[in-house]
Image 1 (spheres, rainbow, N blue to C red):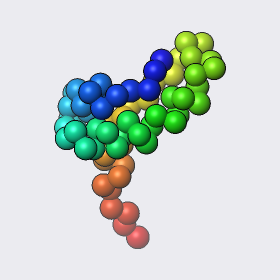
Image 2: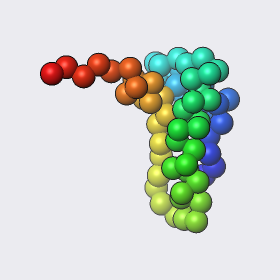
Image 3: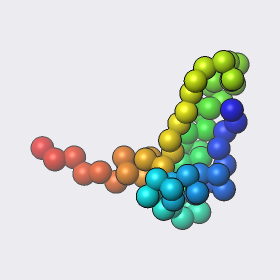
Image 4: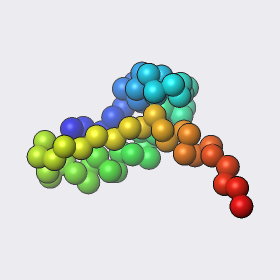
Length: 65
């Protein structure tokens, strides 16, 4: 498992119904990249999947009080 690139993130986001532009895809890649890098030592040994498409939704949700 390698750090996803913006080019890989865009179609994943689109399929999830959250299309993103190049700038946001780059931000997502930079935000989740460290998580992938942290698992390099055990890559391929755990069933692990990240869904970067929901990142934009999480970042744009308004918190109601």
